[in-house]
Length: 118
Image 1 (cartoon, one colour):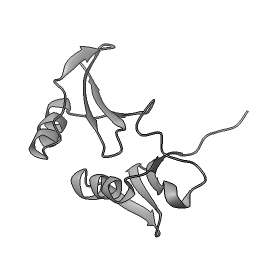
Image 2: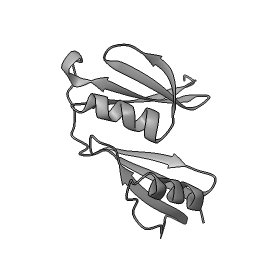
Image 3: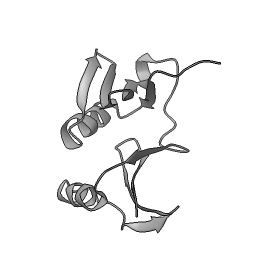
C-alpha cells in the first residue's frame, strides 16, 4: 500500500492567460510556482490546482468537457455572494447529496462546484 501525501489537479488550457488571470486575480488563489507556460496555485496545505498552456504541453485541453473541480467551503452563502460580486454568474444554490451546492465555470469551460454540508 502507499500513502498519498498531496494532490494536484492540472488543467491543460487553450485560453491559458485567461485561466491564469481567473484563478490568480478573480479567485485570489496563491501562486506556489510559475514559469512561462505552467502556474500552480495553492488550494490547501496538501492540494494544488495547476494550469498549463496546451501549446507547450504534451496533453491538450478538454475544453471543459468532463471536468468538475469540487471545493468544499465553510460558508456556501459567502462563497456564492463573492462569486456574484465578481460577476461570475453562479448558479442558484441547490440541495444535492445532502449538501448545498452551486457552480461557476472558468474561462476554459471547466465547471467548479462549491459545496457545504446543509
